Amino acid sequence: MKTEQSSITSQKLSVVIPAYKAEQFIQKNIESLYKVLQAGRFQFELICVVDGQIDRTYENAVKLCKKYDNLRVLGYKNNLGKGYAVRYGMSRAKGDIVGFVDAGVELDPNGMAMLLEHFQWYNADVIIGSKRHPASQVVYPWQRTILSFGYQLLVRVLFGLKVKDTQVGMKFFKREVIERTLPRLLVKKFAFDIEMLAVANYLGYSRIYEAPVRLKMKFSGPSTIISKKFFNIVFGMVWDTAAVFYRLRILHFYDYKNRKMWVNPKYLALVKK
Image (cartoon, rainbow, N blue to C red):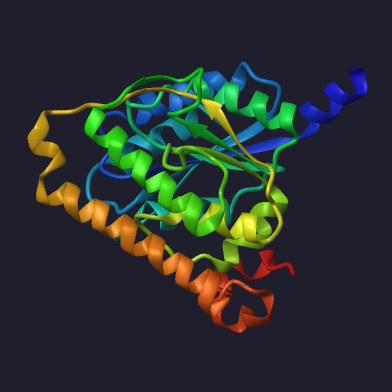
């Protein structure tokens, strides 16, 4: 038992926080996540990636680097999408377990501790937060619940992923999974979660499990569900998901033999068969 505990605490955890237009709450988010990690059993690092320096998110996050030695704040000028930000941070992570947690006030950061416990219990390749886990505490609009259910059914049919929810912004991966999947990925925005999970599963990392979360989503009324912005997000997700299926099942783009097409120089050091 002591040996097992020693093995767990000797592992390093890297947590990427993708942030966009988060100047008002990024410091609170970082501090909340830090407290949760500090109370846990892992050595850890926090990597905040500012996806486009269009407000004071970067400056506000950097201020905390003086307070926390194991915090790194990275960023770039233009907004390139959450998927790009997560991959940008993961490619620079040093942990044995690498994950990401969305910046924002909707997702309770304390749920991260539960995910990491599940990661150890199941000896998982990937652990994902799930709104539809029986133990989750979720305040979520019924309209989005219906859309989420339909989307997850589509994901199961297309990719064979045996999970009930793939869209919560809290996921953790074994480093080996990151090293093999990251160089292959293309999606920068809407369906990057699906691409990561589908490619990992395709490569044989099928130990993908769900864990409970606490989520309270803001919802301003029925107009939101039929707004042009929301429609564009839904369309973007479906389009990107279909593109992942096409690359995976038709083109076999993610196969190692096609590495000359998918190797990105930034991720070259991570490439493994």
